[in-house]
Length: 630
Image (cartoon, rainbow, N blue to C red):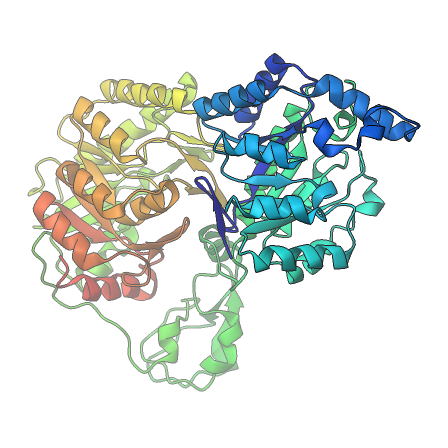
């Protein structure tokens, strides 16, 4: 079940966070507007106040202090001093609309409902004290607006009775688990009651009065769809709610924690291996490998197989499936077994037909094997930092008729990531030196590939951060430093093409934040300013579009005129990168039509996660599936 309060969808997996100012302004309109501004800075979805007409709420004897209980007398004294006027509430409503945050208010009486209706409020909050006030609830039901009801001070049967009452009137509503003491002792909160409350009504949130933020965050982890906490400028101020309220610093931490928990919760339907885990599994896991040289036709037994790291081959969990199989190909000692060794045939390359030049990614050490099996239009050499110290003549003899592209290392010696945009000048200069080495290597490779007049260098040019994305105000500086780095490089005879980036790249088996060459408007702006062309990595870009809410195919249309080279792989979600073609979210036929119109001569390679394994099996599957789409 879901309901809408303004632009917010309650029950969608994102908690609606209410900053309850209540009467913590202590009767000061100026303090109330200051608190609205702080609530916006905290990223609250809503600020909430309270409205009472005391002569409507309390009996006259009580208002006269005619022998009334001392506690009630104390509360009344505070309310008389701290209530805002109707006109001040109206101005607050208008101020919130101007500032772009929702204004809600708890009406404690029927007359307050009439006043708030004249403001056009999008919903109503019902205090715990009025959960059983059926006449007030009936008046609120007639407004046809959603209700959020706290359930503090009520027994289970009272909650059930009110739920029945509201359901009979077709009201959309949320119940909030609540303990109405200020502050609430932890042993009284009974947070697990949320599970039972959800059996009474599916939309359940939490209104907290405890000290600190931990219980509220636990409620988020229990799928609370609304979180309400009181907010104060100073816990030592006069008034009953300040002691149970959060300061703006605490409130901001709670909202940040809420959003992190929501992101971490997932759907819980299936245990999926993340991209980072796949990287670490490759590096740290184990595989079945040949214990000795094996010839085609051997019947595999325990003496032919052993378990070793890294985890790039067949899982040891499939050991018994491998026993007794007839080997379909020769194997060197410690060669990996692969899933194809459990089948009777192996996928091999064949001549492919595309409307644009195509190639495959290779390393120096496997170039000869690939060149004996396929005749692509180009080769994309993926360099590691150790490859930069090799003599390519030990692996290439040439000359070759195909063209070539170089993919610069992302990682340099000393676990240093290439970053031509960093504000750290020493680090940027080191990246410039290493990039210049890549350029020099590329020029040297031209002697093996004389048909390539101006070889392209694909580069992840940096602009990443460790723990959080950059603020918008910092982005331009990163592009400007990258532009300065380009001026300091000698790029005679080569073309540096930045790669479109995913928002959450994986470095050293962990997630980072990428800040530049992710958003299409920035890419178009800086390609135009710097006369750059791009390597359009469609998998990276699909992930970016999923994260940013962009239309992927609109992004493709806009970047196509700036595209020199393509990396083609599928993608899913936020980190499903480099998936096999057809196993993600991309419609490659539709994509192919856009690319044909916008960059018909751009070259491409299949960029499939671990596509090189088992003789390039992942590449050949991708090429089969891409034929007809490109």
